[in-house]
Length: 190
Image (cartoon, rainbow, N blue to C red; front, top):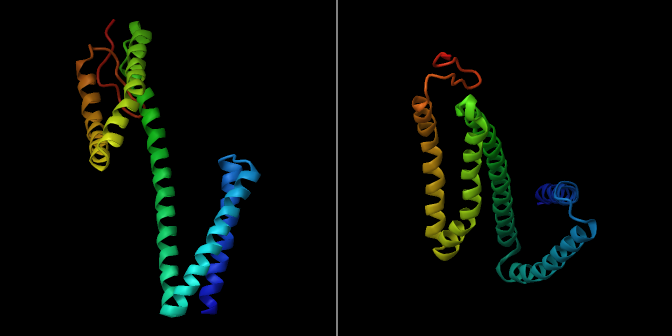
């Protein structure tokens, strides 16, 4: 029991310290706001602690303690999963941005690079204009099924992108189409 309490206390100390540093240094929340949030969390834990203490008196301390450890482990796993999801999403965003720039420049004809990139940017602008309405319609109006539809749209467009890029490469006239790390597929004719 003492060993599990030791591990719990060390973990809580690390969590609180890391949380304060994250919210003040990475998220740039003011220290008073972080302190207020931790104060509210402390007051909630006092209120919940009293209720859990009464439950332990009625049901037995060992079982209630084990249940609280399971709940905390699940909450920690959920937070870890959320952070992992954020990291994967960030990496995906960076890959998407880099690949989008590479494809847009590589497929643009030399004589009309500005026009091509303007149309490419227009697609992004239209998506930024229509995207919020689509998300509100699907995810807010439809609820959970809307989220599934949105996830399917993301998956389908992600899976279709390589095929669309290859199709666009084949439609190009006999100009140089070369992506970094690849050999030119055709030779320039002048």
